Length: 326
Length: 183
Image (tube, rainbow over all chains, first blue to last red):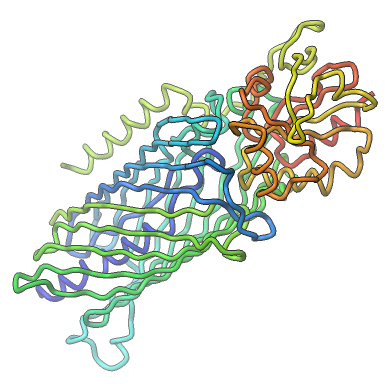
């Protein structure tokens, strides 16, 4: 039973890593920031609390031809985020929670330096344990191949500062300004010390009226960003440290994110679609009872043609701590 | 901590946030709140006289409002920070707007560069050197200030110096409509 608990926590940690790395924020000043992340509460646990900090450093962008383009000379663009997340189980298979980021934008250009902060876009989520894998020592025949499958939905709330607020500068932006409903699928499989996971998400924004842009009143119009698809895969390996049962888990991952063209008053906005690919590495240290864990992660977008479209190229460094309530 | 307390804490945060500008997004409005600007006054509003300016382009030529308008039905300012969205807008303007309006002059305004040379370098890096845009180096951000502009702001001034548009580029359709209606 102890091993099974450890395994499920291991799976949840890796799933958590997988959930966190593909959902990095959008660009700070130019594209709307804030992040929507999810948490998975390990089986047999009551709840999970997660606090993390992100440093996102911008280094150029991909244009619409998917060509890498450098930022203006003398620029240094950064976004810092403090993310608070809480998830809790309800009954045997259900869990719900929320994440709330706080965002600091630090932008330096050759002729201007700005600093701003504010709440990012919050997210509410609901998960359902659809299928559970069996421990290897209990599985018979093909049962060893059965993964854990979790499905869920999340709602992004426009609690951040968006271009459609009264803030007058694009440098102050910390959120998209739209509600978005996502459907999520998490497939996870643990084999001894190895674990792999696949996370898929598909979201649709709700259309909203807009009557101001950066604090400037404009003729009202309706806008709906394009539907969003995210996919990520991760592979992890767990080491036991010493004799006490503490573990270190290394995870590598790949993430893909794309958003279709927005609609403005029903007409397509061909300037809005984007895509991004990134690679990531995560190291997680977990206590013997797996109640506490600390992680460091690096998400890296390649400064090469073809790895994205109409989107900033960034590196994201994350430090997080998580506590599981039993 | 009980889940109820956590939920209350999150709700409290959201409510506090909603006290400010964030309420604009949580409960967006479709009311037309554009102010009415008196004709004959000078300012950034649609219908006002465009504020005068004197600004260097990246070829070290001083540009002023009368010379910018000379021989044209109007001018367009696009405020850029050389970001992906800016690139999309400018690329769209080059391909779909400029060809239809040869009697309009298009300016890209770099309001973040510290010098004319750096604005020129930024334009070259982004692929807009010698494009249909004349790049202006708004080194002191005077133009951005006087026209209440930020990233993506697109401004149309007609041949008589009246502002006809001052809003985000979006998908370029409003810009095309305004340019088509220029006298």
